[in-house]
Image (tube, rainbow, N blue to C red; front, side, top):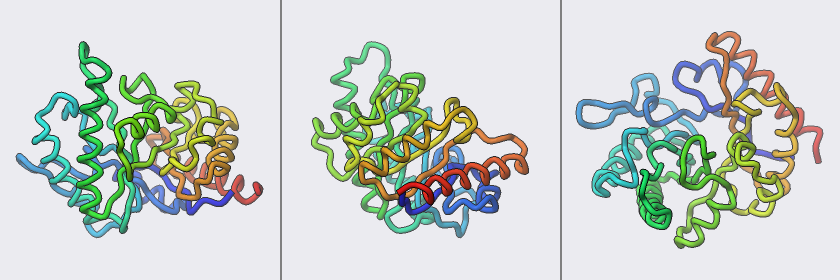
Length: 261
């Protein structure tokens, strides 16, 4: 296998822990972490001043209902927040658009209407991101987190049906396993994968529960993905222990890469 690097999804409190553990990159959450409320607007959290990151997670806060809010409000959110993200982003950085609570369709909204509205939101996010030299990657989320776009295959079909180009799909092993999506589906859509998250069940670090993560990375690589891989796991609340867990997980990923052709 040959990926460009292995990193960790982490909040501000674990950024340095992840770096000391040997992460090639840190992937911070945007909402409620990197970008914070500042009166009626938004601002960069002070702890991130002067930083640079290649990818970001959690684009939209849960209290912004993307399918029912005024589209002007949704656009204004992206227009305010994405320039802030750009200020700490590497050129062309990826933004994982998951945000399950924010994108969930309310009871009674027909599925076709929900998809139509969400397509408009994704186009807006894509366009505003592009204006800031950022790239949106759309993340399928399991049904425990949202009722809209739960699998990789469904997300690819959604983007195609809506005619949305320039947006790739996230392959997150946690959600793939929750939805029992066959790994071969990921290989079949390899040319659409734009980012990868890996963990064991219940967001345990890889190797704690089983070795399915190895098969997953083989399939992702076999489908043609060569970008970065981020660990998205539950770490110990003790930073020292979390650091040990991160280092062990990163070592496992790198060992798998070095021993697999």
